[in-house]
Length: 221
Image (cartoon, rainbow, N blue to C red; front, side):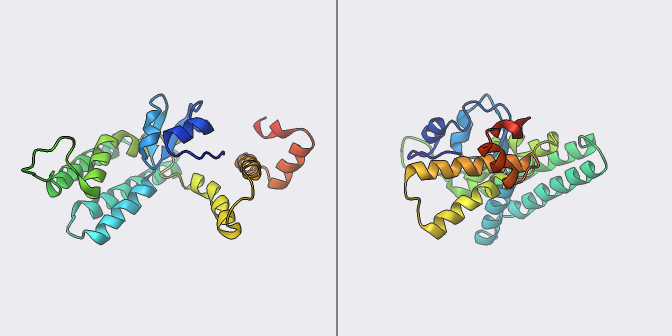
């Protein structure tokens, strides 16, 4: 973890977040992430569920949103059941079923949200609005949305990353701020190191003890 005064792709480049990454990035579909075409992307379905739920609450006339929520949850349930039974992939039946339903709901969503017709001759793209923007995102990044059922190593959401950052937000709220940039960077290094150790099955005490003893790389052995 690191900090940067810049936001978006410039900040990512400065911090080196994805510059050398070679795995699968599970994220909220923020545009900056797609500037890294050489890595595989997966869209966090928990973020999608929150967006879809918001549309259901604010636009109850949208018939496609509750159906899409049900589809994502059904896909999640089917994967979990397959994993419990020792399978490494979904059957052709489920893959075909989910693919067909996905396309049907995208078609319905576009019918319910056509591009607004304007008589003014303005250059540039027409404004889509939040609902249609989400529809287009779901259509354009379908493969990344559904990657969690194609590759069982990909989680349904990126909640683990959110949990890793939670203590930083808590500290910021409690303390108000960090007293210096150097102190903030040191804090982030420690939290990142302890978090990595925890994922490898080590406690914070073991991680810090080994780091102080001159063996910080033990978590990678």
